[in-house]
Image (tube, rainbow, N blue to C red; front, side, top):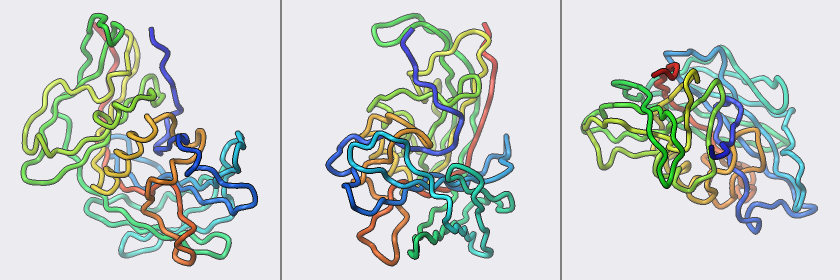
Length: 284
């Protein structure tokens, strides 16, 4: 069976560098702030807290892990109230009081090293799964034999919807470096608006065995976040995730900006997402 890359079950998207001419931090230059995380609404498995991670870029040819930022102030506003995210460990900031609500714009403000960073995203409702199930498929020229988790879902008509899919196997987020992820892990309903889709496999690289526990998530995301993820997967082949490896390529524009020094660009993304989730045990 092909070797799959298993990454811890975390909620943030991240990617390794591909073009060192744009990704590196030259010796002596100031490190760049990297943000990963956002606000998620999950009515199936409600989150006890929202999480955001801050790190900084490392120097040229430095193969160490990104350095966590532990001394920032993070405030997220939902249009009515400010919520402070407090540092817990390893650059992770959390808040258990904020409520993820539909059709709400969330604005993040970060104070770090005397500068202010700000960005926002809107939480859009996602449609439910009609059905989630496992299908056994024989070996082909392109895949090994095994069980694949698929779903049926009906897209709401006359509404622009944007989706991002996550698949977990036995509690771990599974993803394989593949430029094709840009066509399966993120989707626009441009060509299936208002239609029901049958036997959709959101990640053809994930093969299950009997007894495996599977979780599939369909996230409703903003068009801006969709465009960001699309470019991220195209440029990098999705060779890594949050908390792992180096920051996203600098050529991919973040939605968080430095208000004091615009040229000191931020890497990563602050997002808001609605999560539809189903789980099953693989059986005959």
